[in-house]
Image (tube, rainbow, N blue to C red; front, side):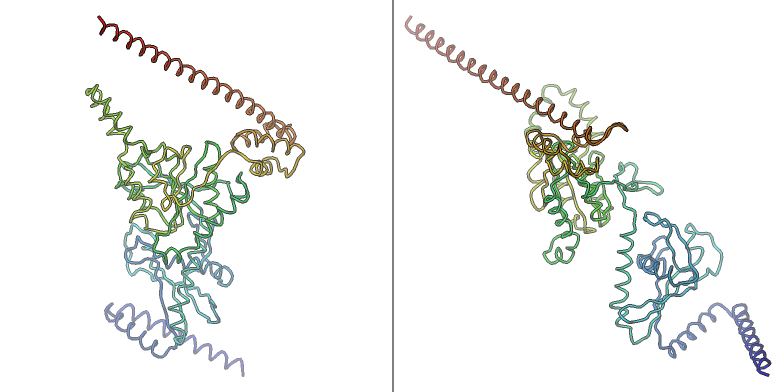
Length: 511
C-alpha cells in the first residue's frame, strides 16, 4: 500500500514538472521578447518581496567586453581554494603569469558556502547564454556572460557591503600577488609602440636566484636594508598621512663586481615585486619617459643601471658644453654632419625630465614602487639627482670583507668553517678584491677540486693581488716623484729665464 502511494506521488510530481517545462517552452516560443522581459522583471520583484535574501552579482566584463573586471578576477581567486575543497563540479584553467600551472574554480551553476566572522554566505557561479549567435573578437564574450552571485540574509546587508566584500577583494588580490610569476620588463624603442598588440614594455619571467641569504654582505647591513624595505612595503597609510607619494629611491654605488645587480634581484625576491629595467638611451625625450612611467604597475622596481653612462647627467655639464662649442667654431662643416648623426641617434631626455620622473607629479601614479639607480662612479653624478628625497637611501657596495666571504664559502663550497679561513681573513683586510672575483676563485672548475683546493686557489689569488697592488703603489709613487721633480725643474728654468730677461733689459737701458 505504501509503495503504491509513493508511486502515485512520484507520478504526480513528474506530471507537474512536465507541465512546467511545457509551459516554459511555450512561454519562450510564443511570448514576445518585450513581454517576456516584463513578466520576468516583475516576477523577480514579487519573489524578492517574499524572500528574506539579498543577491549581489559581479559580472566578468565591466563596460566593454575587452576589459575584464578586477572584482571578478579577485573573487575567482578568493573562491579557488574553497571551490577545490567544497564544490563537486570544478573547472580547470591555465592562468598566465602565475606560479601555479592550473587554477581550479567553480563550474557554471555550481555553489559554495563561505563563512566570515560567523556569517554564512552563498556564492554561485552563473552564466547568461547569448540569445543569438554572433561573431566576436572576444571568445569569452561570445560564449556568454559569466558572473558570480552572492546571496545573504537581508539582516546582514551593512556587514556584507561594508566589510565582507572589501575583505574578499583584498584577500583575492593578495593571493594573486603571492601566486603570480614575477616579471622582468625592458622598454621597447618608441617606433615599436604603435600597431596591433604593440607594447611599450616587453617582459620575460623573472627567475633570478639571488636572495638576501645568498648575498655576499655583512649581516648587519643586510638586516638594515631588509627592515627598510619591510617598513616601506607596509607604509601605505604612513605615506598618505605625511603627504608623500608611496615610493622610495635607492642609490647603489661601488666598483664593478660588488653585487649591485644581485642586490636588486634580492630586493625583488624579498618584496615579490616586478622589475622594470629602463634603458634611457632608447628614450627619445621627456614625454616618452613619462609615458613609460605611466605604463608601469605598482609593486615594482624601476631600475636604471649605470646612470652615469646612460645620459649626460654629471655635474660637469657646463664644462663639457663649453668644450664642444670651442670645437664647433674650428670646423663648422664637420659640425653639421655630426649634428645630423646625433639628432637621429641621441636621446633628448634632460636632467629636469629625469628629476620629474623620480619625484614630480607624475611619479605619484600607481604607488608602491622603488626607483633604483646604480653607478660605479658616484662622484660623477649631479648632486641634484641623488640628493635625499630623490635617492632616499644610499647603499655602498664595496670590496669583499670576511663576513661576505663566509657567505660565499657557504654558497659555493657548503663550508661554514675551515682552518684556512683565518689566513683568508687577514688577506682580505690587506687586499681589495670584489665579491665577484672571490666567487670565481671559490667555484670548483673540475670534479677533482674540493673545498681545500678552492680555498688555496683563493689564497693564491689574494696574495697575487696583494703583490700587484704593492707594485702598483710603488710605480705610482715613482711617477709622482718624477712629476714633482719635473715641476721643480720647470719652475727653476722659468726663474732662470726670468732673471736673464731682467738682466738683458737692464743692459739695454744702460746703452
